[in-house]
Amino acid sequence: MAKENLQQLRQLIAQQAARMMAEDGISDYAYAKKKAGRQVGAVDNDVLPSNAEIEEELKLYNALFLSDEQPENLRMLRKNALFTMQLLERFNPYLTGAVLDGTAGLGSETHIHLFADSLKDVEMFLLNQDIPFQTNEKSYRVMNDGKRDKKGDNRKKVPVFSLEMSTGIIKLSVFEVDEIRTPTKRAADGSNAVRADIASVKFLLNQ
Image (cartoon, rainbow, N blue to C red):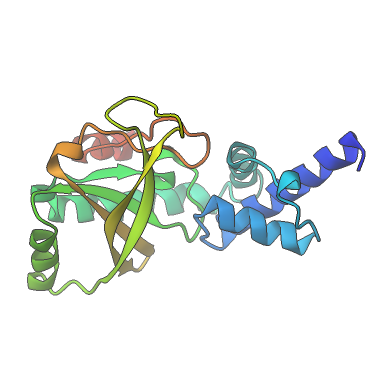
């Protein structure tokens, strides 16, 4: 395939993946790009766009097609995130991901990191508050003691509580307390993920 055609195909897949992330609430870049690739008949991984390319198309899609709905939806997601964080304040909550960086689509998941002495403490708190949840795990890319090993970033599996809210799913990833200074990596470009505490989310909502 000619280089120009290959680039056009990559952009088409990136645009399709971005549309699904914006409209359908898909938050997994790998799933979105593979599904978009299948829809256009591209099954070769070499043709698939990078996560960063999809993120750029996602920002563009939100600006072009969701300029009315997306800002208000984002504000509601952030308000619900703040409410949840205040409820879970004892577990050192931090907002991260698309709801924080502003790329969240209409059905996006909200990601909150908790730092707790015990996973059981979080579970018992949710049970005592009569908050229904589902449990799962999420694999995060993290740096190994701040140093990159020969294989690059390490991966760490973290327990996750999923809460179903009126605006979508809130996922609570529970880390150990001493991991609060260990950055996780953004799926889009591998840079350190930004986290925002309660005060920072309040400030964001008041802007």
